[in-house]
Image 1 (spheres, rainbow over the protein chains, first blue to last red):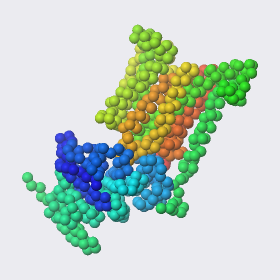
Image 2 (image 1 turned 135 degrees about the horizontal axis):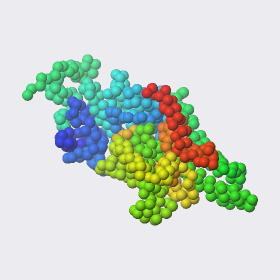
Image 3 (image 1 turned 45 degrees about the vertical axis):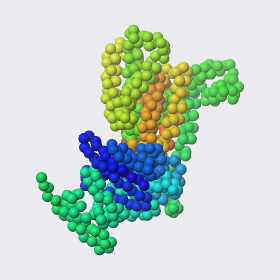
Image 4 (image 1 turned 90 degrees about the vertical axis):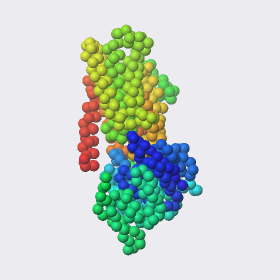
Length: 261
Length: 361
């Protein structure tokens, strides 16, 4: 289990996280929601081990992340960042191969990873010539390869996605979230930051809502995403309908809540 | 999953890769033999080979009538050729490394301040050599005062920049790049001031040094350069993590690269390589930028090919430039830095045009 125990962080006099707790189990997909500036990215960077909290701790199976060797951590969790710059003309397949820490992977594995994100036909295209969405999919393939090569029987693994759908078109948003869903079904713990609440409702096992550096609510999508709570967190009135196909709540944002004071 | 029909990971540039390093090694060998054969008195290549092989006992010693040839090859041309080879290899390899570390295809060894620091120290040694403080240094190091001061000046500048850009164990390459420009300007100003203070003879020495030459090579300046070979090996050894570093420090950390240790080693290695090269040859531009770019065009940016390739091609380029430098206006010698710029700059412009056509802007 990947777990943040009441972590806090103050940077430059600003309290970015205040007593936030969050845990991801193997086999589940947890979506993190929250308005801009809520502390989502900071919390994600804590969960990946990139920054250390002032108070509290983040553990992977009862061991603090800081105690893991970076290479060992790379075998246990993969991270897809929002944006990755790469100015050199690697082919898509070569970028995927960068996820291979040991230099042991065979072409079939690179094809497997590219196939997961629908990029096999562009394996040989140079990265700078790919569209933003295609580049993002190539990086996802790289992270999938990293996790697959790091896999060891009996050791759980986690996939952390920071706004994975931001630069994708409608079809690939669905495809990537379905992929994350199916990876979770296969035993991976998935933690995804999403902006689209409806997508989170559809794909998440659990939802956590972050505001002002604190986890306001956490639990099953239906229980957490109430109209009142969403209005309070996002500052807009919302209507809750029912998705005629899935029966899940469907959120429609309306006018902003009037500011008082 | 099976590889789908009609799909392959390798294209033209992958098919060139297996040929690249053996091809460059062969060309380099040919270049070395040519460099030993060509000169004021030209020596048949076969005789050059005989002289070399007899030294290691694989052939009988050359007959006495050819003792002069042996002297020219072994005492004059061989140290000079090895120096050109090592300097070119150091510059090519360092350029490739820095472009990777800074993730900037325009980075070259001058950016980490080695060259400017070395130039300043060299100018100081030449101009202030007669003053009491420097006289002690020169008295201590004798004929090696200039290369040693240049080497230390280069290392000190890079060390300063590195410290400046490092906070809590993390080195900001962006800060280092920007500080490198400032420190480079400062060192140039210092060098300019020394030029202003110099007399005619000192001015000629400084100018000659700044334009670069391997003409001063002797065995005693050449052999220490061979100490760079393990440094080169240590650089090529980290080609894979350097590839991963191209994703950015953050991403590289996330996939398990010890970024701080890697960057520290590469900066030290480059400072040693360029410092040593500059100290024996003066400033030689464009090798560090043209060579890696050319290789990337052929094989793609994978450092497992670009690094060893840059080492071999850099060495070859400088050997060829040195052959031209000492034959074009013989018996006068052209500074080699002029030749590398004349060959390198138009080629670089052509590369840029080609890249522009390929990627849009």
